[in-house]
Figure (tube, rainbow, N blue to C red):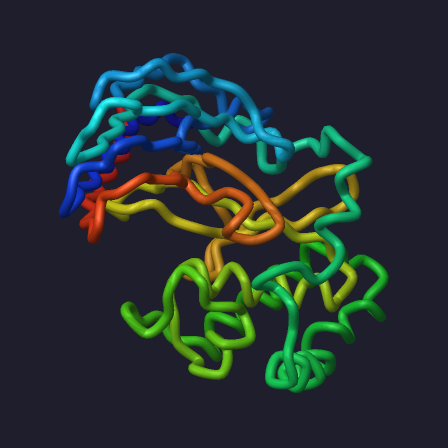
Length: 268
C-alpha cells in the first residue's frame, strides 16, 4: 500500500469569448476496496456554482454552468489517496455486468481484429483446456500479445479512433491499447471495461483495462504490459473511452480552443 499525492490541472483557452458553458468533469477518484481518498480539493475558474454527483457507471463527476462571458476555463483537482489496498475490486453491481460483455462503440471488432482473434485462439484460447487457468490468466496472456504486436506512437490516432481503426495502423496510444484489449477480451467471453486514471511518472491522464474474473475486477495496463500496481490512481470506468471522458462541455461561442494539461502523481 502507498499514499499518493495527485494534482490534475487542465486549462482551456478560447479564441473568442464564450457566452455560456455547461460542463462535466470526471477526475475525482472514487473510493473502492483498492483505493481510498483521504482528501481532495477542487478549484474551478471562472467562478461558478457547481455540483458533485455520480454518473450511471458510479464515477464521481463535477457538473455546472458558467453563465458570464469568459475566455478560459480551468479546473484544478488535488488530493491524497491510499492505493494498493487490494489486488482486485469487488464487483458491486451484478445488473451492470451485461454491458461489459458485448461490443459497444469503439470496441466493435471489424475484419482485421476478427482475423487477429483467430490467430490468438491457438495461443490464448487454448488455455481453456488448462484446468487451473482462469480468465485472469487468459487476460494476462492477451495483454502480452497485444504489447508484442502493437506499437506505441503519438499523433497517429485521435479521441474518436476505434479499436479496429487503430489495429489497422498497428500503432496508437493508451486509449487504443485499452480499446483493442477490451474488444478481444469480450470476443473471448471475458467481461472487460475501460478505465481512466493517473500514474506516477506519466504527466498526463492514462487509460487501462479491468477484466472480470469471478466476483472481482482486475486491472491490467496493456500499454506498459504490466499488472496494475500501487502507482496508479483510478478515476473512472465505462464501456469505452466516451463513457468516462474526463471533461466534456457544451459551449456558446468560443471559436478555436487550446488545452493545457498537467498531471502530477507522487508518493508521500
